[in-house]
Image (cartoon, rainbow, N blue to C red; front, top):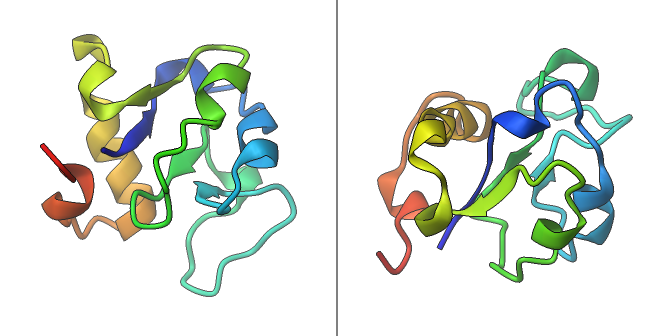
Length: 104
């Protein structure tokens, strides 16, 4: 199951989630540039989770100070647009549904 970072992250971009992630799946990290041309930390309004890299450990969920991280099944309906927003950052707009519906 994929995790999604939703609206409460906008403007906050607290990196506690990045710090606890055991597989480095939350992007963009402060001070990092990406070879694939993805925007950097200073260029985006929020953080994003790459579902291909995520191991579904949920370590990021309890450390988020603004409760912005949700398992796909628990994402409040009012923030469903953040599924698309997340994939646009991670995939550059090339949606791959199987990544977002693992086990669904």
